Amino acid sequence: MTLLIDFLCRFAWGLCVGLLLTPTGVVPAGFFRVNLLVVLGLGTFAALLGGSALPGWFWPLPAAAAVAAWLGSIAWYAERTRGGLGFCAACAALLAAASVCAGPAAVLPATARLLSGLLVGLTVHAMLLGHWYLNAPGMRVDALRRMIDLALVAWAAVLVATCLGLPRSGTAPWQGLSSAELALLSLRWLAGLAGLPALLWMSRKTLDIPNTQSATGILYVACLAAIVGELTAQLLGAGA
Picture 1 (cartoon, rainbow, N blue to C red):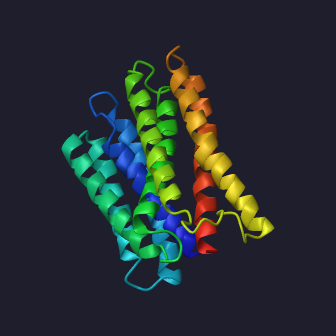
Picture 2 (cartoon, rainbow, N blue to C red):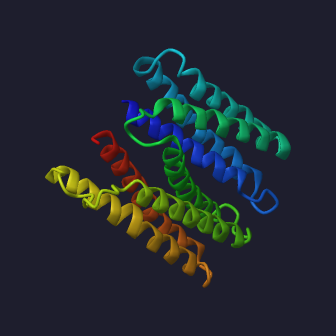
């Protein structure tokens, strides 16, 4: 249960960061409003689960983030850009604190957990942004291209953090693992660390045509690769 709460908090944190990095002059306010409602759902779910699975001091963090997301969606509905971004920043800070508090020390260091959430959040955010082109076909493609670039930067940071976390004793990281752990490790590298950047790059190149619908379709698969990759990393860390 704690692993799920941790994943929900860091995923929602990554979505908030994606919103903060989205150019408000290019992307309509409706996109921010709808996606803050997604964050509202994730924060509420994490608070409900945390109320029974974690100490009593934890659940107010995702609950407060959910409230901030709700207030932010109202601000965006009224097209109050400054207020909407302010509530989004507050939501991101609360969710980052919740992820740090929810993640058990044996799973992943706090920085690695936040980077993991950033990767998942930015990848899903890019997919949602690509889908928004159906509502706003005149929106500049640069916004989606920039978000894919940011997801690739997040992937590079996760790759570095993963390599730094490998054993330095000369022992191969797969030695001593059970067959189930080997399967998880393979899935982690194939989906999250090898397949994901290829999918993101394919989506970005598709925008050169430009074809936002095909790029969004590829991003759907990229979202699956990111979620599977980071969930398997979380499971591997829990078994360490």
